[in-house]
Length: 190
Ligand SMILES: [Cu+2]
Image (cartoon, rainbow, N blue to C red):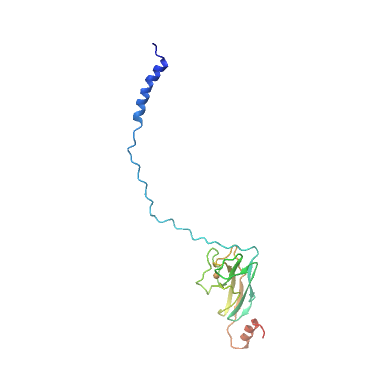
């Protein structure tokens, strides 16, 4: 009987193949390294909290009804605030396209991405009750006043709604009819 040459080759090759393969697959004796435990490292310093600014409609504005820019007044100074394109609403009550007035006295506008400071009333006065009239004590001399609207959380709108800066002069308090007359001017005649 004859052995097919190809079959012979196969018979010879098979053990060879197995012989070669067997030692080539050794069990990996290296134990899996234990997973590194989550380090208790403090998280990266968080970004400064990003506030959500309420949108203001285009063309919205706030302004001084009185006093007029350049006016000479006496202290306490009667102030009246106007608003256009938005509504005045008290602090704490979210309402679309609304906010409350803040009076900026002899100061830069506050940051727009944070609540308007509440701890510097001599610079930033809040009118969180929704009032649009007030009177402030100001020392004699020139003062710059500006208004900025803040939302229910006292955060300026996007874009910020601010008035022009007005400059007023507070006259020296004087005993006499001069000062009396100027104060009386703002009052309604009776
Ligand atoms: Cu406020």
